[in-house]
View 1 (tube, rainbow, N blue to C red):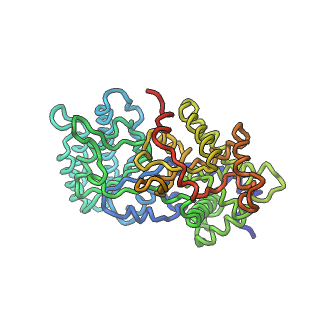
View 2 (spheres, rainbow, N blue to C red):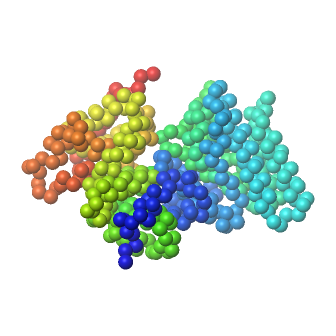
View 3 (tube, rainbow, N blue to C red):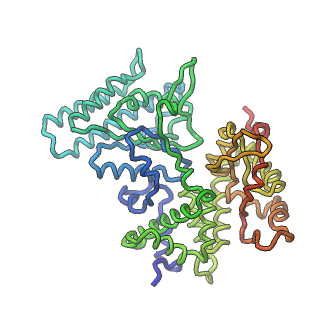
Length: 484
């Protein structure tokens, strides 16, 4: 008997019920059950303050909530705060500092409320202890109002009250998780980071884990020669970059095993939770054998997701929709994945650029000069320019993807380069456009050696040796940057 029957109504309902974002899960218990352990959880098991970087959809919230559940299970005092929940209604008017003050004031009040809930749940403390804890948190709420003179907030008093609170409930360390940093207006982020640093990063008994959307943040700035905010290697000694863990081009076997187990767990959670007890190897083998026509179909799905868990789930759902259109098919095939990846790119990623013609111009430049002329979808960018605004915008939109690989140029000894690749769906979507003849001429040339590429390889594999001479330099990037 098969574990998954794609033609059944129950399987269709399971896919409809799979949540696309971890924070939409109703219960943390469900998150823990479908979570696939990775080295990231191990990297978080330190008392150091850490930033968890990753683009939208890579799984930061899911990971942080599982980390939270582990700490609670260990009996640790933990507080989880989502910037989305206290950012609404605060407004973006005023100077960046004033905006940050409003956000930080709300953060302090929400923290006091969270800790008060913890006090209410405590069973052992006597009445006097409960009263003292409540009084401490009341004082904490009062400190949420900024000072009219001197320092913006009474940082030393916040530290003192937090430590007294810890002593009263007899814990040596408190763990605080701050998620959805991107909800803080970017120009106010350095000031918010400065407040956070003085009030909590400076407290030796507090460990903070902060979820940050990569390529859309500003942790620090310089004002009148003084650094404001959090500085790496000075205030943050350990950060984690989730995007680097799921790059198919770097470690195909590990990435496919991860996504196979991820898909199995989400399906099992809806169809039959008892299946979650299967061994990881059995889960991966079941997904490949019962859901897809061949291993290559699943590999193409992993490639199309570009290491992003949410994109993986969405493209899988759309692949299933394509599969259902062909009543004679029994499993999801390569063509279904191709169509789904194009659909997701055009309906989600491309729409983000609809009003930014400068980005569209740069993408067309890549089609004409990288894909067509250089026969590649991957190119090099000088290491010192990888944070260029144009690239950061396309990285954030998941239309370009930086690879965790340093490369060298044969004619530029000593200079470091980063590899950047064009999104699978973006490349595939060029088929059927005015650029299709360029792609067909380059990749499907009838004179190519037999077996090097097949038409089913809609998004071909790059020859890394040729990439060493394909460079997009600063002059090209500046040419397409938006005008002020």
